[in-house]
Image (cartoon, rainbow, N blue to C red; front, side):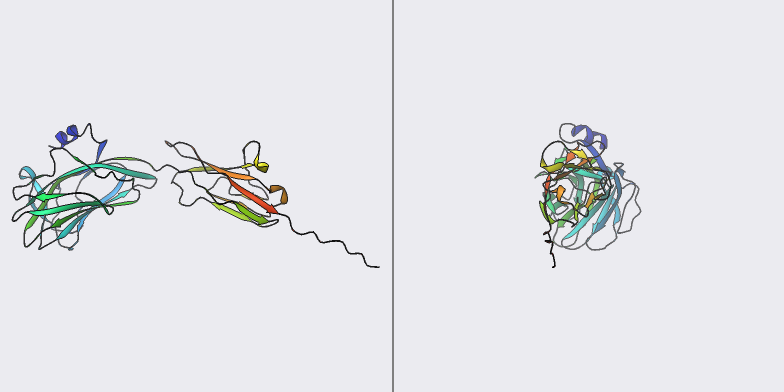
Length: 281
């Protein structure tokens, strides 16, 4: 069944990054992991529910094991994924089998708070689609923790079962982005720090200067005035007047990503007042 789903998705999404058939069951528990098939850059995964109730092993798709909850009214399943540092996930599509053994119940799916789908659940059980469903609207890329919520909008008692949950996505390096800084005006002798906030993990940095605001860009080296020239934070200290009108930028590189340059930022240096010589007779 799983291979058929993959073949049916060739024209729609990139690859299966998470699949759990719940066969490696360790029920009853709330905080189920099992033995899912996951992408190498998914560091961890876990199923929980809004009622803090133990899941149970039930008859799922094609008489295999499914993950059940027997609750009143509305409740939610949560799948929490941890994406490896320096990577981001673009979720394209998903599919799962579901069944409610009594009256019909509606379901709604959210991914990191974004509503992507909804439907009904029949007592005889079925997949939500004959082919994996595309996220609608398309989702932005996510990094860090990704939470998938399946909310069951039920009335009264009933056993709800989920089985063969699959997630289709692309996981790529989190690439640097071009950023800008406000121009700076300082008095001679002051200091200035230019910091790139939340840089992509694994990036390398090289700060450059365009002297006087014209000419060519040259790499900076750490010296009396500059420090941190190969980090995300450039520090300029004891600024002299000949730094007036300098432009600064950072060239950011990362494996498998395009090279990015920050937007040039201008420095204006105001000379200190000159103290006149006073002659005493």
